[in-house]
Structure formats: structure tokens, C-alpha cells
Length: 156
Image 1: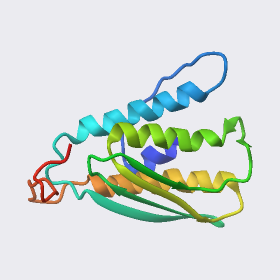
Image 2 (image 1 turned 30 degrees about the horizontal axis):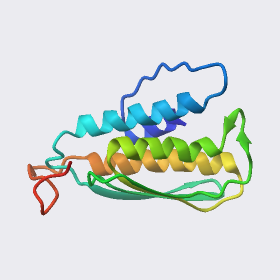
Image 3 (image 1 turned 180 degrees about the vertical axis):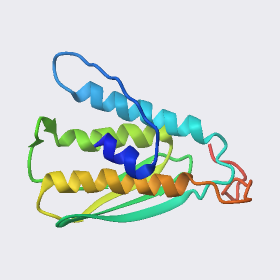
């Protein structure tokens, strides 16, 4: 799923991760933490970025929407009802845990929704593709704009 995220977001990402022998919980959460920190650090003072973006992404019968505000405030709305406990060997409850870790450490407000769909794999694919495109648009630098996109003059 991270491959889909990076492909559709046009991000360069290489991850090597290993965890304890119990399960993937800590690895998935740690990747969310580190990816969030990477976005936060890379964006610096946020001068010139678009800040806001959204994307609707269809994946066969599923339709997903992601919206972001690179605001310096961490908040997650996660409205993704999945009907299966596992997708392959991926525990589906870990999806929300990943995004909690990501938003907390990136200091972004993120809304993730599955508007409809019946195939859990398609829903999760749609979410990662949608988020990649959303973050690509929100992080993009507006040509000629060097201002921080906040009336406060700062985004933490």
C-alpha cells in the first residue's frame, strides 16, 4: 500500500523495517510515526505550499475521499468501515492505527473516508492512492509564492 501511496503522490520513499516476533502492530505504527515525522521535517516552515487539498479516488466499485490541512494541528477523522478482520496477513484495525501515528507526527489534519465499496482490498487501495495525490497537491509549492499559508504567519 505504501508503494501505491508513493507512486500516486510522486514521493521518493525507501523503507526497511523489522519488528518483534509477536505481530506487525509495532512495525506498522512505527512506520506511521517515522513517515509523519519525515513529512513534518521536510515541509519546514511551509512557505509557499498549497496547504489544503482533497481527492476523490475510485478503485473499481469503491470510492474513497481524502482531505488534508497542513495546519500544524494533528487531527484524524477516519470513516472507513471495513467488513473483514484481515486483508491477506494485514490486520485491518491497524489501518487506523497507522493513520493516527502519521497525523500525530506530521501535525496535519486528515479526513479519510470510504464513501462506498464492497471489496475491502479495493477500499484500502483507494485510500492510499487518494492520500498520495492529496498530499502531493497540498505539499506543492505555488509558483512565485513564498508566504506561509496562514493568517498567523506561522504553521508549527
